[in-house]
Every structure is written in C-alpha cells, then in structure tokens.
Image (cartoon, rainbow over all chains, first blue to last red):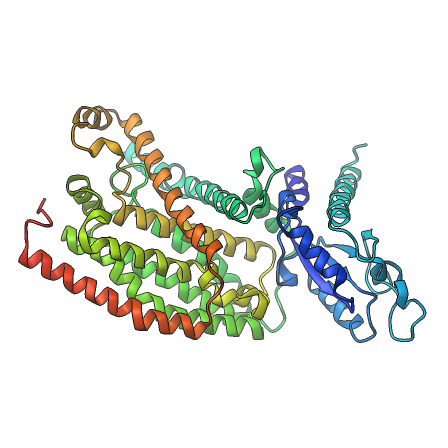
Length: 149
Length: 349
C-alpha cells in the first residue's frame, strides 16, 4: 500500500507557480517548460491555481521584503507532503540583488528548498531537468524511508 | 431468490455499477487529457503505465494520501459532507444508464426526470461546497455556479426531453428500445438540434473550458474548489469525471442509440439474434459499443474545450437565455406539432 502511494506521489507532481519579485524572465521560461516542446505534463505535472491542490511550489525571484510573508503563507497553505523548486539565479542566491537592502537574498532564507535550477533566466530544459531531479530525490527518500538501499 | 439478490448486489457494486464506472471515468479522463494535449501539439501524460494510461489513477491515489486541511472558518459538517455526496449522486444516476444491457441496473417509469433532477442536485452541491468553505474566491465561484445553473438548466432539460417526446416515453429503457427500431434519434429532424444544444449545455454542467467560469483559474484561483485539499479534492475530481461519464452516457442513451451497435441496421438481423441469444456475448457487445459512443462524445467535448476560450459569466447567461432557451422551446414546439400532424414521421412502436 505504501509502495502504491509512493508511486502515485512520484507520478503526479502538481505545480504551483509563485513569483516572489522576479523580473518575469524565469516565469516565462516556466511557462515555456509547460508548453508543447518540453511539456512537463509527460511526467504528470499540471499547473494548479490553488496552493491547496499543489505538491510542488515553483518559486522565482529573490523574495522582496514585501513578498516574504506572502511566500511563507502560500507555503504553509499547501498540504503535506510538499516540495519547493527554485527557478533562476535570483531565487537561489539573490543574484544581482545580493546585498540590496530590500530582499531576503534567496528563497531558502524564507522556506526550505528541495531543488535549485540556476540560470538567468533558467532554460526550459533546465527546468524539466530540475523536475526530474526532484522526482528522483523523492524516489530515493522514499526508498530510504522504507529501509531499502 | 438468494442468488438474485447476490447478482443484484454484484451488478450494483462491480460490473456496470460502482467499480466499473469509476474505472471507466479514469479511462475517459486519460482519453480527454491525451487528446487535449494532442490538439495542443503536446505529448500529454506519458510515463505512468502504457502511454500514461494510469495517470488519472495516480492522481487520485496521490490526492487521497495527501494532507486534508479544513480551514478554521469553514462550516465543518458541510465542508466534509459535500464531497461525499457529490460522488454518490452521480454514481446513483449512472446506475440508470444502460451500459451493459438494454436496461440500466435500476429502472422505473419516468426515470429520465429523476436523472435530470440528480444532475441539478450536483450543481446545488457545488454551490453549497463553495459557500461552506468561507473563502472569498469560493463564494464568488459558488455564486457563478448558481448563475450558470440558472442559464443552462432549462435548455439542458428541454434538450434531454426532445428524444423522450419523440419516443413518447419518459423511461430511459423505452427511449433506447424506440431508437433500436426507429434509428438513432440524432438522425430524426428536430432532435439533432437538441443534440447540439445538449452538448453545449453539458459544458457548463461539467465546467469544461469555454464555460468553466465558476473555477476560472486566472480570476478566482480555483473557484469553489479553492479550499478543498487531499481526499476532498480527490472526491470532487472523481465527481466531475463521473459527471462527464454521466453526461456523455446520457447523450449516448438519448441521442446515439444507447448500447446498440451495428446489429440493428437492416440486413443484420441474424447477427442481432446471435447477440441476443448469448448473455455473455451481448454484455460484452453492448459494453464495447457504449464505450465507443461515449468516447466519441467525450472527444467532441474535448475538441470544444481546446477550441474556445472562456466566456464571461454575463455572456454565458445572456447567450443561454437569449439563444438556447428560445431555440429549445421552438424545437419542443416543433416536435410536439410534428408528432401530432405527421404521425408517420415518428413511428409508434
């Protein structure tokens, strides 16, 4: 039974897209990753509107001071188990905004992050690879939890 | 006696009943998603099972295993009850649809009215679900669902009643048997218009894209479903799929001849006799034809979903009241007139 649930979790990662102060470059690339050429729906990914329905929070941007509490709230609204994927250099480290007075310098200073996809903007291939990496990571974690090698 | 009861329970639970219908909804959702992706030049689900055929099943299991959040502000009883009822009601209605036999599992005089009533109940459950979650987006979604119901309810009912008027019966079994003799009612004169209206009014009923105003993602997050997570959301998705099966099944039953296949064509009487003689063969034959016809209706709906973009709520309601309702009243009047003036047109069986 738990194997079935683990398989289901690996097979249908539903995305929620959140822009925490990005320049929209990465957001366009995320949409490109969902569009015909790359089509993340192959892995069962669907873009969802409500945080209550999503499994993976796809974040972009360096988290401006105004967006930080909202990002945390969106994250807390998602039901367990939930994962976070950061797209773009800004989201990973703060990027060109590092050292500015008005941002948190990266998503991982606000919420726990599972996968980083660097790039300015990150290419759709990289985003697809990031999604696959996330699913692999999940698979390994599930194996560990069951005590398999 | 005991065997009869046992077989009856088996019919309701297993074969044309609950388990089979739920499996069928997963299959139809997969067909819908694959075809939708194909129309958009995408691949669609690919890696879960053969060409992603297990994708809807995986989605369902995943949602069932997810955390189930009830917001503090929500009306707890209603919030828990509506997802359950919204699965049970379409399942009950599906028992009346003839799938594996020329009659449904349940059948009584005038059951068509009962089914139409049940489809309205589902819409009312949606409104209750939206209001019980006490979220602004949900409330607006529920209000829009109610407005939509005002718009499509009358044309939908009149469209479903047109073949009933042609067959001079409100019993689904008799409508199906009438079509076996007189031909599919989609081929008869005013009924084909009714079929078009039926398909159009199914879209708001199922909240498919040109009419998915209550759950408009770009405006309302997820509309009335916004606060539902985990099991409850899984039930709502299942309910929507069951409604898709119910709507397509109703279209097949009323307009496309029900589970009958090619054996009712002239010159194939021998085949018909063979099929009717063997109960296993007839069950398989009818089920396969029902599946083919349902899949065709689902593909038509998917096509419409991919072709159009969302209407505004006022456009939808105005369109329904200005065009669809008068059109359907006209079709109803013409049907009544024709069956009175030219009795040869719709043969009495």
